[in-house]
Length: 115
Image 1 (cartoon, rainbow, N blue to C red):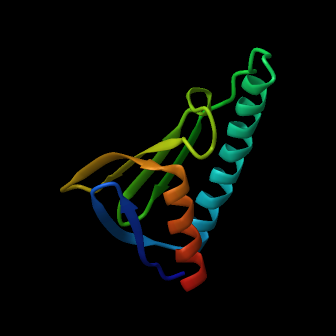
Image 2 (tube, rainbow, N blue to C red):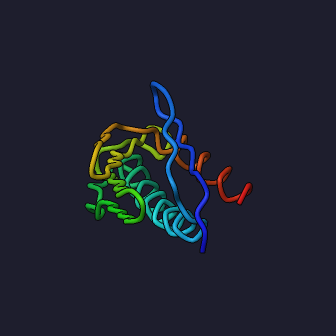
C-alpha cells in the first residue's frame, strides 16, 4: 500500500510526512474513542458527580517516521478544548508539540477524503 503525504496543521505552521490511508483510518478510530472518553468526562463534571477516570489515548505509528499521539481525557473540560501531544521523529529530527484535537480531526478527515 502506498503512502501519500499527510499534512498536519500546527499552531505555528504545518508538517507533512508519509502516511497511509489505513494508518489515518486507525488514527481516526483512536480519536473517535478519545472523543467518547472526553464526552463521558464532560457529562460527569456537568452533573456534579465525580467523573470516572478515563484511559488516556496513546496512538503510535511506525513508518518512514515515528508518529505518537497522546491525550489524557481527564484533564480537558470538553472535546472542543482538548489538545493532543504530537511527537514526530526519525533518525535526524524530533518534533514535539500540542495540537488542538479539533484541528487534528479536520486534517485527518481532509486527508482521507483526498486519498
